[in-house]
Image 1 (spheres, rainbow, N blue to C red):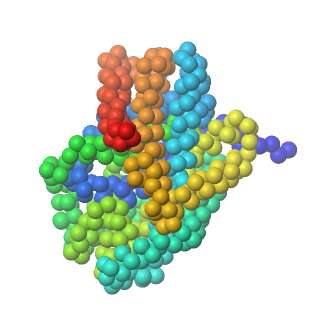
Image 2: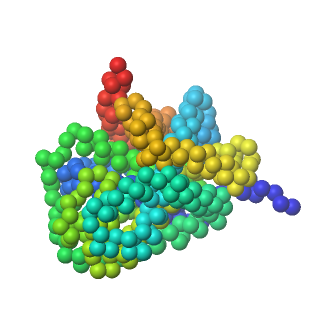
Image 3: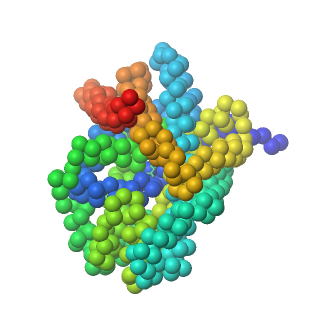
Length: 460
Ligand code: PHE
């Protein structure tokens, strides 16, 4: 008899390594390849990299451990996990609001993530077919502007990307998520290595290396700390329950501390490697590192266009970006998807399609922000896309992350925490409480207040 086994059978990653790959797949995304290199470039290169590493270690890792351990303890979607854990800890059921915030953040982020990932996919063809071969800076800039000005084209790629995402997640943890990860992650590593070799031989490697690692402290501002912390959250997929949802499928015997450390290390190495693949190519062609997001879609195609085999490696670069994006996109749906499947005992596929349609519709706002709605602005003069991005990344994620680690460290029964983490010594238990329970939430609080303060003061 055909029962909806997907909704009743407990789902688990096939091994600890698959969890590491899946979580790294979620973490490594547009944040690492598109965003990290240009923000590092704008904020003092090596000095920023150092600040970023501090944020990953002092805030990112403790929050990720908290999320994964709560997920494994609750063994259900973030909303249900929060309900269960709050009950076990004798706390208010209102803590489940954390799960709801994550669901909302997932929707918002995926809605624009699919649009930008669509750009990457479209640039695979554009580069591969030689559009940029020998093109001038003006031509490459105009190609991107024309692309952004055409809603139909953007929608076509956004739709394609969403369909693929929904198809994968609808197939479930083992047949969908794991199957995609088994393919895409090794491909991503191979592509990155190929691009590193290419950039190493481009003639600009020393300059690119210096750009990433020279300590330009004069370019570091107070803002750089905020940017580094925000980036640490986004890049590690923290604060919205993704890691909690993925954590609920982690086998009982996996050691959480070392597992999380491996995931964070992989994510960081890949972000730095992406920078080392990009900058030398830019410098080898005598180009300036463009300020902002144009680095990927304008400067880089221009640089590839000047180089031997540039069309092949350009296409490989945008494939890398697309693979990184899809393994993150699938993780963005998991908190909402798992919740609906549990709550209504519904079929994963059906739920996935409904979520996909809503997210796709929301994404149209982002598409239009680049053309027909480019003049429509909200609080602080932000476009629809900027507003969604700001609200999810600067408000929902830090707030969620801060409350999650606070809950994990101070409200969960101490024995539960220590046994999940395999902590036996009182010293380590206390050290963990200080780092995860005090330093991490306070660090986030500092960032959080300083990001929303200008926004609030702008309101009156
Ligand atoms: N970590 C992803 C990236 O760097 C984005 C992401 C955020 C994915 C939150 C899931 C949850 O692109």
